[in-house]
Length: 206
Image (tube, rainbow, N blue to C red; front, side, top):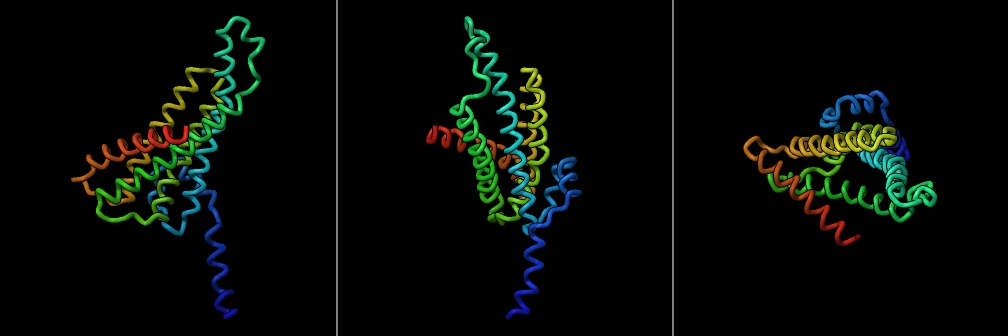
């Protein structure tokens, strides 16, 4: 029994080894994540975390600028403007980010199951959809860095969010094995379900 356990340990440790070169490739080519397998689920988890952290950095940097802008329109508002975003606003934005990720994953997985007729294996699905998100996190980080310019930051954020939706929906179709005949309905239904789920979750929680 001890011999069998010793042989199993290296395989378990290998699951948590990350290749920096692969992460760089995922940054340069997000759709290369479609080659990830269920054994590489950690790349997917870290991709989702990277995307969420990029979003939070944007919230912190841009939120402070937005607060300054709002108070600047008030008489003597500059004298009373807080130096940073309020905890209440940050908590709300934090929750919106989490709900958006959850709604996106759920909508792609459920629509893929429905339109393909086969339930996507969740580890492989998580690896591939999560692996797409590294570049999105980088885009949101850039949006945060550009927070000194309201219009530029919003533009970069908008590009990042739209890119995330397009790449994720395309990746979801590939990961679920959607046929060409059902691709149109998958695209429409997955985006629609995402918006509905996000709206319902925000309504229930906020």
